[in-house]
Image (tube, rainbow, N blue to C red; front, side, top):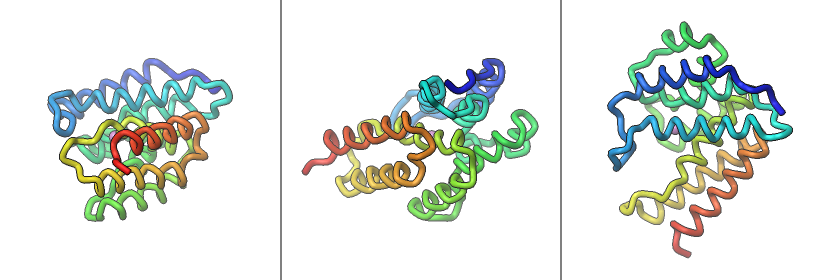
Amino acid sequence: MSELWDADLCRRAAEFAAEAHAGQTMLGSDAPYLLHVTSVAFEIARATAQPGSSLVGDLAIPCAWLHDTIEDTEATVEQLEATFGSAVTRGVEALSKKPGLTKAEALADSIDRLKDQPTSVQAVKLGDRIVNLQPPPENWSIKKRMRYSEQAELILDQLGNADAHLAQRLRGAIDHYRREHIPE
Ligand code: NI
């Protein structure tokens, strides 16, 4: 089993995320956005505790809590750097979409940058997509649903080697999404 994580460090990451995402809600719902980030952190924490896991909890779990802070909040790279140091900050940067690209380009670009990161950071992208493969909004067209599941397939194909447990979870989530939400 990989080493267990530093609970104080992970709590600081949770607090930072809670403050940064304060007031934000999930798309099409009143639920706090922090619920998304929390779900990803639990997905990752579970994976680090899997027998045989080589994930480093002190990198993977803070990156999970913080993965949307640069992309979606006022938090800055400098603040992250000062609070969590450079390994976590580089990880969060790689997990963030660059502005000014189409969705497909931004995903390909983020995957490219993630490939230069430790598997503990890559794993967060798997956890994020597992959590995001919830039932789609009613108004999503079949085409949009298909595109979303194809993106998930690309993430699994490109980053699945980062962690066997998460790769298996993502495989199951994609299959379930297709079965339940994309008519034949
Ligand atoms: Ni996310």
